[in-house]
Each structure stands twice: as structure tokens, then as C-alpha cells.
Amino acid sequence: MRQFLKLIVRNALRHKLRTGLTVLGLLIAVLSFGLLQTVVGAWYAGANAAAPDRLVTRNAISLVFPMPLHYREKVRAVPGVKRVGAANWFGGIYQDPKNFFPNEAVAANFLDAYPEWKFSPAERAAFRNTRTGAVVGAALAQQFHWKVGDRIPLEATIFPQKNGSNTWMLDLVGIFHVTDPKLKAQEKVLLFNWDYFDEARAFGGGNVGWYVVRIADAGAADRVAQAIDALSANSDHETKTQSERAFQLAFVSQFGDIGLIVGAIMAAVFFTLILLTGNTMAQAVRERVPELAILKTIGFTSGSVLGLVLAESVLLLVLGGVLGVVLAALVAKGLAATLGIILPPILSSIAVWARSLGLMLLIGALVGALPAYRGLRLRVVDALAGR
Image (cartoon, rainbow, N blue to C red):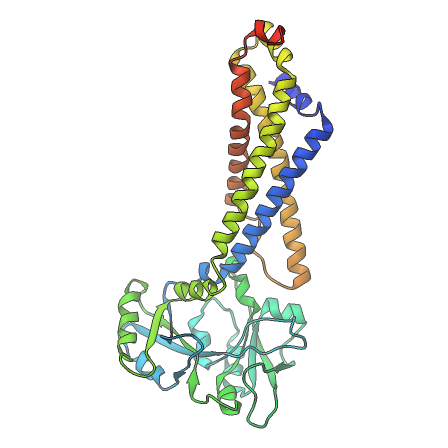
């Protein structure tokens, strides 16, 4: 076995420049795959982390159309509903437009709909009792070096105040964190007191953007959603209630089917990858036809020759693939630190490694199959005669 491995490695390194360029091409392809998959994961993180017992009720026409705040009491009275939280997109800017992060005005009980957000009892009480109170996720607080007690100025892009000012001064009263790594993206949000927002804004008072509804039984989600929407049927503010996951996916889909776009790009990349590696292996086998004939002459079986060629192909794929995955993880980590964003980790899951390794082995077997088949059918007399 050791001699086989030595032979495979020596054959792969016979033309170092060609092998190096092939591995570099593989590395770039896998690096692209890893980074694009990371972007897709980040893009759909909200939908993938959605809780099955949460529904979102919004205006049936569009999210930009508001609903009356008093409608909350009707929703709360629907059988199966545990609690209802109101929210409105604010869209403020902190210091610079580049510092984008989600910020919303929410009712005090909105926090109760998200038990995965960990607050101290004192922080919850402070948010409820502080008119200008705000809470932020731990990742956002770390990014801007905020701490409890800081004052945060948000510049309005949609909602000016009645007094004509665009600057909303908020008092940071709480910082929450999540324990599940899959939910880390939720730590990049700022929420502030709904009462302050509703009293001070220049227009739209008494209206909300959406309701988050916690239900007692996730299995009854469809029935509860239909009951909620029936309350406003044929009114001027008909609603559409859907699961939190469906709501997140609908929001993301406004920007296009990112998964389909990335899938098409990667299909083209891997098709090119197969052609590249296949060409390398075809050349390698063509140059070594006499040597393969000698191997058969001294006792190597056709299956052994087949295995040597396939193993060489797989070696190139695995080498380029592993380097690409590791480099993708390092680049993604650097981008997250530089841009202040949260990206799902590439290397933390055994499933990711297993899927990547399986893909490398599969492509290696595919691109090496035809050259290996030629070696399998090789006749010693023809090979030595140059036919």
C-alpha cells in the first residue's frame, strides 16, 4: 500500500507546474463555492432560524402599508394565541449610512415573543419603564463598543419627529445575547420603545407595521392564521398572516432568488472544474501509456492500473478542495471582522466537511473515469508498439 501511495504522489508531481496550476484552479473553484454558500447561508439565516410557534401578521397588500394598533386586541382574542407584539420598521442611521443594521420600534411585550433572546429581569423592566429605552444584540454592541447607559443618536430616514428634528436620542438599557450559534445574526438588531416612537413621530401615529404572534400549538398555525385574517376580511386593512419562516422568505425574495443565482454560478464553475481536471488527467495518462504497459507486464492487474489513475485524480481534487475550504473559512472570518457582519461558520460543522469531501471524491472519480478506463483496456503489445 505504501508503494502505491508513493507511486501516486510521484506521478502527480511529475509535471509540477501543470499540477500546481490544476490545484490552484481547484482551490479557486472551491473557495468561490465556500464563500457563495456562506453568503447564501447568511442571506437565509433569518428564515432558517424562524420559530414554528411564531406567526407574522401584516397588511395583505404590502409590508409598507400599516395596520391600526387597536387591531392587536382582536388578534389577542383569537383562540390559540398566547401573546401579540407590535413592531414598526424605523430604518435609522447611526453616524454613517455604511453602518447599516436593522432597527425597529417595538411594544414592550414584543420581547416576550422571543424567548431565545437572553435578558436580565432588570433589563426587561428598564425597557418597559424607560420612555427612550433601547435594547441591542451583543454583536451589535460589540461592533460599536456600546454599553448599558450609553445614549445612541439615530438619524431618521423615514420618520422625522413632530418638532422637526431627525435625530432620535435613545438610552441603551439592555444588551441581549443568544445561545444558539445559528441565531447569532439576531444579535445585529436594535429595538426601541414603541410609545416613544408613536408619540414623537410626525405622521402615522396609531399604526403599526406588523404583529408578531406567539401561538400555543405550532401544529395549529394554519388554523390560527386563517382565524386572524378572517377578522379583517372585506375591510380597508385586510391582513395576511403567515409563519415567521414564510414571512422571512417573502422578504428575502424581494431581492431575487439568491439560491438559484448562486446555484447557476456554481454549476458553471464546477463544469469548468471537471473539464480542467479531466484534461490534466487525460494528458497524464496519454504521456504514461508505455509506463502503464510496463506495469501490466510486471504483474499489475488491470484493476490496479485503474485504481492508480483514479487515485491520482482524487488526490488532485482533495488537495485543491481542502485548501479551498480552509482558505474560504479564513476569508469569510476576515470579511465578517472587517465588515462587522455575522456569517455562518464554514468549518464548524462535520456535515459541511463530509459534504465537501464527498463532492471532491465524486468529481475526482468522474474526471478520472475516462482516462482510467483507457488504462483498464490497455493492451501491452499495442502500448509498447506506440499504437
